Amino acid sequence: MPSIGPLEIMVVAVVALIVFGPQRLPEIARSIGRALNELKRQADDIRSEFEAGLDITDEPAGPDEPAKPKPEDPGTQEL
Image (cartoon, rainbow, N blue to C red; front, side):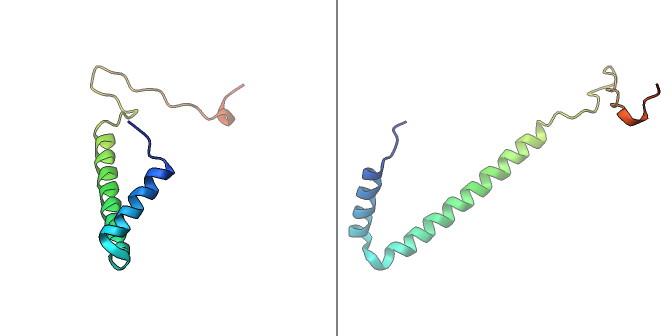
């Protein structure tokens, strides 16, 4: 995937300024920002649902698997 450099960003900004004009450009930029923010929020929600569904816990998976022993506190060990 090609990277976008500062020259390409300036060209896009100038073309957008010419096409939309200086009065509408801030409104369009806000709309695009809100849409991207909502898209990011939805992607994070989907990612968290997948992680919750695939979460591997320390609990035994079934009756055949023994439970893992809990680590002991080093201050309570007998000498």
